[in-house]
Each structure stands twice: as structure tokens, then as C-alpha cells.
Image (cartoon, rainbow, N blue to C red; front, side, top):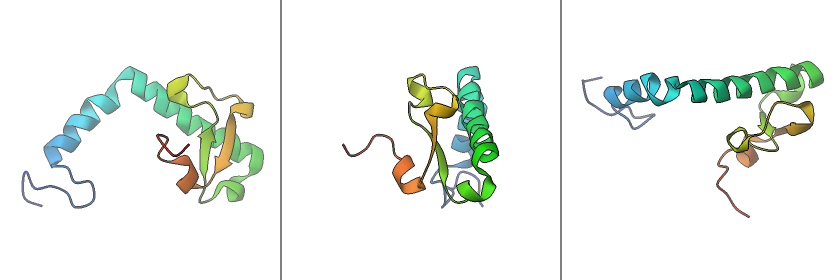
Length: 90
């Protein structure tokens, strides 16, 4: 790929991707939130089994950005189409 040319999958230039990876994604607050989301998947997979969550999203009933934690009662399994795009339909 030529320098400065947008990636067809992400629609960003290599410089824009690097800026996000080394900037926003590397802030301590965002690292903590990401690790919470990763741990949530591990918690649910231990509880229900890996086959039960294959192809599904583990979601927080109270979102991490709104202060939700990884208590088992706050975690669930949902279809990706229902879980992604939180700013959604009422």
C-alpha cells in the first residue's frame, strides 16, 4: 500500500491508525476498560463454556462506560447485531 493511501477495510491512512493506536487506545483509562471487557468474556466462558458463546458477544447490562463492572449478574450473552451500536433504537 502506498504511503498515505487509505486502507480499504478501515478507511484510515496508516498515520491515522498509528495515531489512534499510540494515542487514544494507549490511555490508561481506555486500557482499563478494554481489559474489563476481555475479562468479562473469560468469566462467562468459564461459567457457560466456550461453545455457548461461540459467535456471540458477551455484553454488560450496565455498560462499562456508564460504570458497569464484571459482576456475573451484570454480564450476559447476546447476538452481535443486538449488542453492537449502543447508541440505538429505543
